[in-house]
Length: 169
Image 1: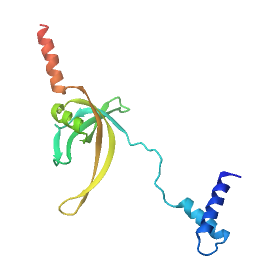
Image 2 (image 1 turned 90 degrees about the horizontal axis):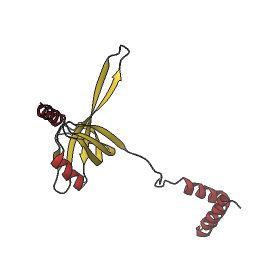
Image 3 (image 1 turned 60 degrees about the vertical axis):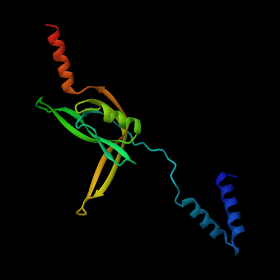
Image 4 (image 1 turned 60 degrees about the horizontal axis):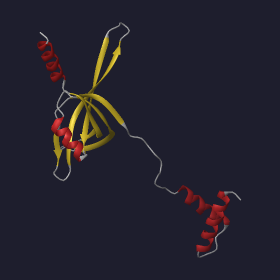
């Protein structure tokens, strides 16, 4: 006997046994089908993973409350493309990065500065809020799981190069 027939057979006998009045086979089948299609919590895997490499646009800001602190900063990523004419163009996308993890939050707040090149891994989070006028605003943020410092700010890199050039004279 197949597993489905065994399962149906057990379910049917349980349904028939628990019923206060005798049930027909069709009623048992309906109950079996209802059982199979009842809403359940899905146990499937899904992926919400974002990887960004770019430059910090704003110094980190501490937000939230003492009970639920958060650090927020912006990150610029660039997309480069070439027109048919041969001209190169660069488009910048801005991302709002939110850091909740305590140790990561403290490190970002202490060391991250505007212009620093960083690698961010996290997940995308959509939200909404109402302003004082009752208008609903939609938000998108990247909740950082990891922030890896690639280099200092562009300005400090330029200063380092200038210092090396002057020392070689």
